[in-house]
Length: 449
Ligand SMILES: Nc1ncnc2c1ncn2[C@@H]1O[C@H](COP(=O)(O)OP(=O)(O)OP(=O)(O)O)[C@@H](O)[C@H]1O
Ligand SMILES: [Mg+2]
Image: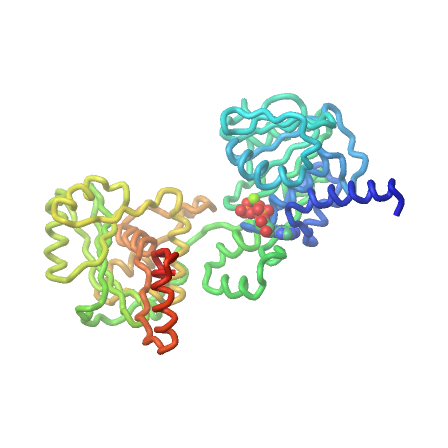
C-alpha cells in the first residue's frame, strides 16, 4: 500500500469508527425509509423500536452531505430544525444520545447553548441546526424557511401546519417519527391518506434487531390488545370500552377464606372529600406471593381523624405491613402520623395508563384475587371503562375509588420474599468467606457481597 493509499485508508477508517460510535444496522423498514425520496417521511412505530435512531441517522447524513442514497440533495439556506416536545428533549435525546454520535466532530464549527439547553449548532459546511419545541407553540415554530426538519413526537394540527409552512417555499424535507399514542384524526388522514408527498413506514418491536423475538412473543401474551397494537406494533388504535379486559369473575374472584395471622397484610386508601373514600385490605400468601383482597369499605362524610379511626376499627388487631394512599392526600398522611401510621403516598399523575395496564396484567397472570365478599371492588373493576367520545386513554370518572385503591396498592406493593432455601455445606462455606472479606460492601438486596 502506497503512502497516499495508507492516508486515505486511515482517514476512511477514522470516519467509519466515528460513525460507528452508535451501532446501527438498519432493519428493512429503516432501510426503506433511508431510500425513499419523498418530501415527507413518517416512521410510525411502537415504543423502543428504533424510530429516533433511524430519523437522526437520516438527519446526520443530510446535514453532513454524506447521504448514501441521495448524493445530490438540493438546498437553499441550509437551515435544519430539530423539533421535540421541549428543548431539553432536543438537547438530551436528539443531540446528546444520537446526533452527536452520528455527526463527526470535525463538522462542528460552533455550538450555542442557552443555559443547559441547546439553541443551535453551526457546521463547517454551512448548515445550521436549530433546536425547536412544541412547548413554545406557534411562535416557537415560526422562523426562516428550512431545508430539513426532524420531528420526534406527534404534532397536533396547528403545530403540523406551522412545521409544514417552513418547508413549503424551499421544498425541504420533513422526517418525522412517533408512536401513535393518541388518534389525531386529521394528522392520521394526512399521514396515511392519498398524498404523493408523504410516505409512511412502520416499525414494530419485532423489527428491532436488539430485541429477542421469543421474549417479545412471551411479553405480549397477557397484554390487552390495544396496548400491543399501539406500543408494540405502532398501529393507530383506540382505547374504547372496558379497560380491565383481563378481569373476570371466574379467574379473579374467589370464595372468602380466613387469612392466616402470619400472612403479610396491606391497607390501601383512596380518600375522597365529597364522595366515598375507598378502602381495601389485601393479604399475601407467603408461599407463592399471590395477593387477596379480603375486605373492602366505602366510607362517606367522615373527617380525616374519624376516617382513620373507622379504618383502624375495621382492621381490628390485624398487623398491617404497609399502608398506601393517593400521594395528593397530604392532609391524611399528616393525620395518620399522629396515630403512628406511616401512609405511603403513591403518585399517579401522568402514570394512570401504565398503572391500569399493570393492574390488568396482575389479573391476567392471576397474581391478584378479589374475595367474593368484596363485591363493590369486583363491580367497579368490571365496569371501569374509557370515555367512548375519545379514542385516547381517558377513563370515565365515576365510582372508582376502590379501583384507584388497587392501582396505588399494585404499584407500591412490597416485593415477594421467597423463603430462604436451606443452604448446602459448600454454600455455607462460600457465604462465610464472602462475609469475612475485608472489602465487602453491603447491597440492599444481596446482603454482603
Ligand atoms: N437498526 C438498529 N440497529 C441497532 N440497534 C437498533 C436498531 N434499531 C433499534 N435499535 C435499538 O433500539 C434502541 C431504541 O431505539 P430508538 O431510541 O431509536 O427507539 P424509539 O422507537 O425512538 O424509542 P422511543 O419510543 O423510546 O422514542 C436503540 O438504543 C438501539 O439499541
Ligand atoms: Mg424515540
